[in-house]
Length: 383
Image (tube, rainbow, N blue to C red; front, top):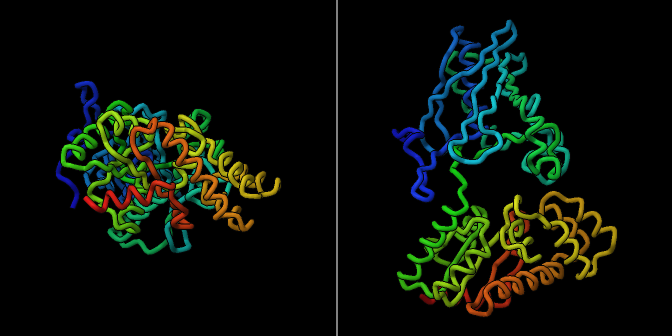
């Protein structure tokens, strides 16, 4: 059952200012598709549509435009990013729903929705850059409407964001191999305002709580992948995990300043490949040298020029790892990379605390750990 609260009830504070949550392009897509399907099968025009998002709340969204044709219906919902500085805020997200003779629910992207051109992304090459959670949301809404109207034929949904063609030039999409538009994103359906100061402050507050509770050694994960790996593949106490987002350097600084004895990171290689180059803010807006770092480490491990060039063309670290493994150099390359990770973590800590990291990949599992990681894990488990 969805939360009885409204979107207006969700916010964070920054410098005593309330920052409002918003909703994603994925939510807009699913809502527009639901409205179009309702009009197609119900025969009546809607001004608003209700949708439950994975975050667990109900939203009532306005239908900004409607086009009813003989072969289908198109509806538009305006993206609302709340107080997040999102380039897509205010854009119209369109969904066109048509009947198909072949059974099934077909989801594709139209104008302004990017198309995947390189391997290694969430969707395969050739597919629209509509991520799995928005696809699942759209599919669920279409299935529900079809069942309610006892429609047994096929249905096609095309998501379009006309302004996305220009907006994509202001994103990393072209570099990632997504061409022609933006991506339809969202894992919860909700946009949380990404205030750097507020996020760093929340990390500091949580760290202070851990230290005051008697934790001399701290445990941190930079993202959801790290938190999931920590919970499912280690014996460390998951409840003591501090989610530090992209702020590796700031997390180390705070641990030093607050008198911690040690700090262990459990991280996906996608984040910490950047740390191996001394990059301490792992957000793609700050820097991205993953392919370059992995190519350099592979060369140190014995890779030839052809393999190094192939690594430089990869989009994701898992794709690069596949090439390195095929060359028989995965273990040696990770030794080189983890050596650099340990060096830069220690350098940031100025020798004031013990730092370390456990590195893994979603596809290849455990990849290795820095020299101090075993000591840190022992001290974390000894508490």
